[in-house]
Image (cartoon, rainbow, N blue to C red; front, side, top):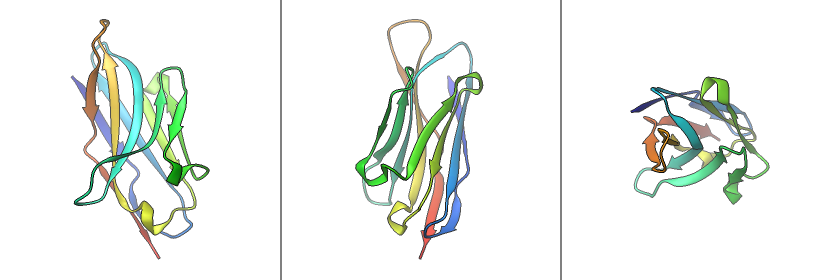
Length: 120
């Protein structure tokens, strides 16, 4: 089992920045993928940004050029730096981690979610 602890959400004004963090802990796992998703009440959860074990990154078109995903392998932590925030970025942000325990099967874990609100 992997535990994910998210932090960094909050209320900001348009154009401001926030940095989200998600720390993974548990026993003897290898992280293959770390991602951030967001969800507005009543809609589906959508990918915001992802980073693979190789450090290859992927971004939703809506956040390209404004958000940056990064990771610290030593700390098993993924970050999402969000700049130039817009009201449409308002959502609950979820961390997602996929790990294996030495075999071929991947296990999927979600964080508890952190609210990001951008006020105009």
